View: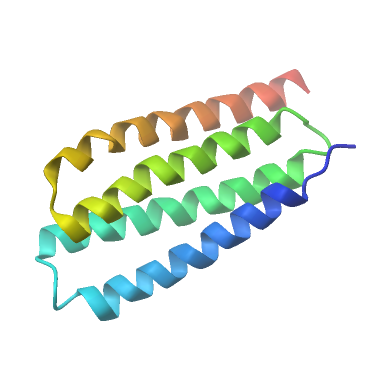
Length: 122
């Protein structure tokens, strides 16, 4: 049986961070960021939460579908690239950071496809 705890820990920490960053946006950034940048930040937090839950899900599936572990770590990469670039863009308004975001989106897509493959393969 594969060890699933690292993914469960990563997903839980990602989820906690998403909640904290969402609260920070709602209470600490609302008055400081223009609405467009606040929306960018909130998109990062929302997608981080979705994929944190996906990572936890992968951790729970690893025992039955060992290839689900790879999907979980691909989701983690997606969080770093997608959400991380959106947080940095929102806080700095350095537009070039937006060039990183699509790579995170691709990682999310690859993670979901990999999870489908893991389930199909059994």
